[in-house]
Image (cartoon, rainbow, N blue to C red; front, top):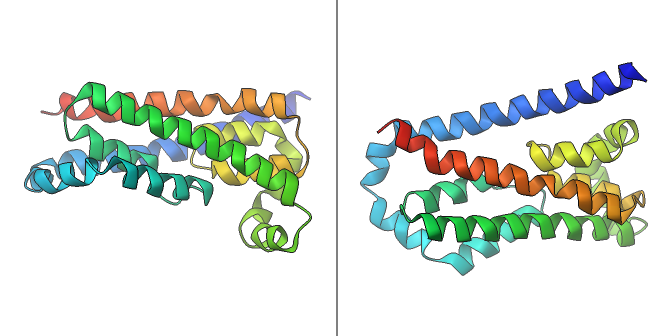
Length: 193
């Protein structure tokens, strides 16, 4: 039993480390290119001001396995330099991501026997089957706080009829991830200027 717990922990730490490295690369590139980026600040602010469009793009991305990293949206809004607006927009991202996870759960739950779901499963989700059998809801936790596709883990959890109350409770960790990354995106550039 202790060995299984250790393997769960190592699975979490390995994916968390991957996520932190990816995050550090994005943030470092942003900081190093900040002078060049500032030349396009007017255009970036124009894009950042198109909130409904950005939120729609993020929603589609989150439902379709998190194609676009949320940190990109955070960086767009961070560059405007208005903390209250940044926090509100980050809250939107967090709620959309959480809702996309719940939607993914129900897609997996209600459509897992359909041919369309089976095609999606075979193409995108099958690689996570053994991990789901091995880690159960722990895989959803890892998906919520690391780069493992959150929506995909939610679909798998729904397809095996994971108890919804436990699922929703674990998904709260997604909020913690967005708060931590959001703070880092806001604060990190200030340490280097």
